Length: 112
Length: 115
Image 1 (cartoon, chains in turn red, purple):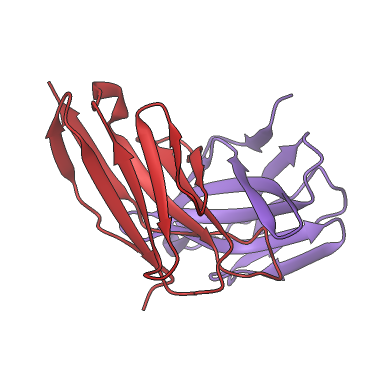
Image 2 (cartoon, helix red, strand yellow; image 1 turned 60 degrees about the vertical axis):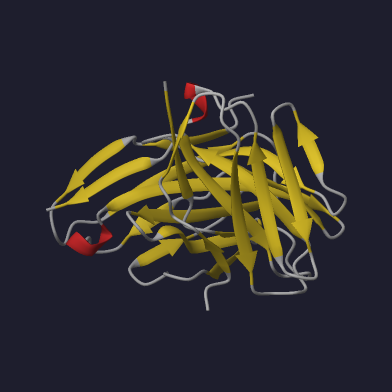
């Protein structure tokens, strides 16, 4: 089983739609969780951290379910500029808090 | 602050050639790492360093060497390039406090083709 698994997509949605991505992780001791965004032929960039209580940043909401070991990202009112690949990222090692494991990403395409 | 700077942005090598990919960060981050990204494979960790003078292997270290003589620099050396090393290479740096990571800052990548 992969340490971090994501549905590769693509998710094709119209502008204004709400879309949700899920990600599962295998190590129950994981401490830090993130969503990254990667545009075509660019480097990944941190979108948001994921906190146990859930957190929101504008149109983006991240949730963590430790019991089921999954993380979600909800995007409301999708914009054309949201088209990108979204990477789920987990730090699985409590003794090496900088070693992050990346999922293979979920591709989102927003159309007019 | 420049963040994480990678050079070169593009490189074409012949099989058997060696080269060094440069990575420098000016954020005083202790942790630095090198990833390669291939279609359908996601980001795979090659080598990482938790501080100057300390390096360790990641998931796919074969064919690559690293060193960390300063906090700022973390070069990646390809010893004898092979077509299987054709990929996009990303350098990243980060810091953590206690048991919380603050995520990575990535360089803009090096697109390497080995012919």
